[in-house]
Image 1 (cartoon, rainbow, N blue to C red):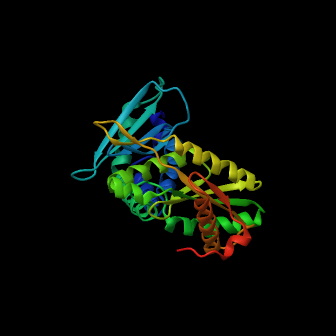
Image 2 (image 1 turned 120 degrees about the vertical axis):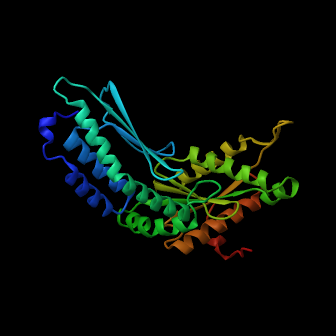
Image 3 (image 1 turned 60 degrees about the vertical axis):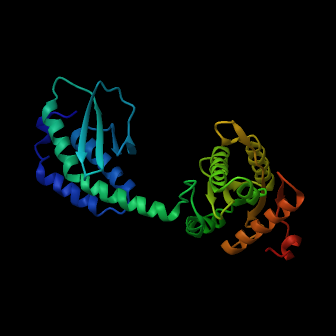
Amino acid sequence: MQNINNMNTYNYKSVIALNDHLIGLKKLDDIFEYLSSYLEKDLAINNFAVEINNTQIFLNSKDEKNDRKKEILIKLNRKDQLKILILYKVREEDNISAVLSLLEMTFHIISQTIYNKYLEYKIVEMTLKDSLTGLYNRQYIDEYLKSVLPLSKREDKKIAFLKVGIDHFKAIIDEFDYNIGDKVLKKLAKSLEETIRESDIVARIESDEFLIILHNISNENNAIMIADKIINNFKNAKVIVNENTNQILRKTICTGISIYPDDAQVIDDIFRSSDIALYEARNKGRSQYFKFQKEADNIELF
């Protein structure tokens, strides 16, 4: 907390100026980055969290020991609420009530700016993410690769692309229904996310097909090792078909592997080579992987 004598310049006008600056920032992350710096400098606040409707959208913590907390609740509209949790330490020279009043005034003024930027973020997220699994979609991958491929080329680094498909997925729909099919897709999405590194990307790009992007691999053996791991991990995944009878469904996957820039150097060719590799893996049977080979490039895909 801050001594009130050090806050003579912190007033209503300064908060309005803060809000005007936040409005001009493009991203939600930019808003919180600037706000964190601002509050730490002016009010010595460096531990706070922000929630909208009980979903945390920001957490700033400097791991300091705090013995007090202040919760600020702001009604945004009939159904949405912003909650700010401030953690702080009390010192003898602090004028606590004055500081907390300033904090409350600050967040009431900037709350609508935070909310508007949050809504913009959610709209963008909806266009770039698959609604069923929460993974990125094909549109996101196309944009993502436009910046990632040139960077990897400059740094002379390889990227592995693993196209993942569920074996005989249509049979699930025929035997059960689309709800069970959705359960299998969500189970696979979770399994893939748990298998790869945080720096890697997994996306759902077609109805029952996914794409994993493995950054900075040294050779194709690294990609093969991950392909084998995701295949074996999903073998053990259980999908509950009927909760009353505890009927369990197990499925398998195949994986096609393509390496950038060895196998393909542009986005369309990357997808084509990984498609061909997945096709060849499925021809081998269930739970198979296949590394793209140039001589396999003349097969026809239907």
